[in-house]
Image (tube, rainbow, N blue to C red; front, side, top):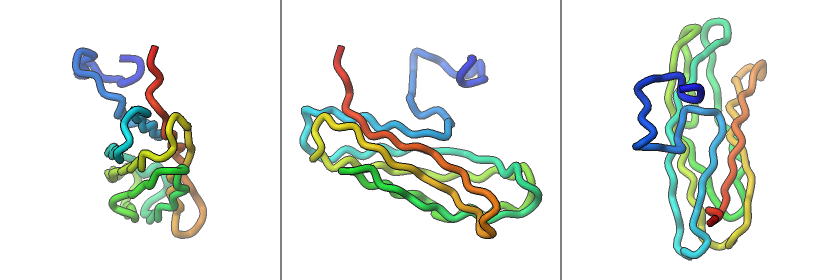
Length: 125
């Protein structure tokens, strides 16, 4: 409950896709084929009034990130918008951790919101 802030989350059906601003895509280093992971996020406009944000992506080495939609348009303060992040790991950086980021830039340049992205092999214990 500390992390999710909800009593409705059940740990017996766990997911690493919490609505947090960062992303970690884990892959099996023993599998050579491409791996795709999709994350969904909901954000709230806490700025004053309307705002439009355009996404900028820094791709992690060996992976590609796609965002949908690429533009978020808010009409009012506290309005919510959702987007999806698709991370495609190509399977060519065995056992290497790579880093990228998703940055939402406000049209007028006043605000930017950065979310780090990590693509990492699953570490077996």
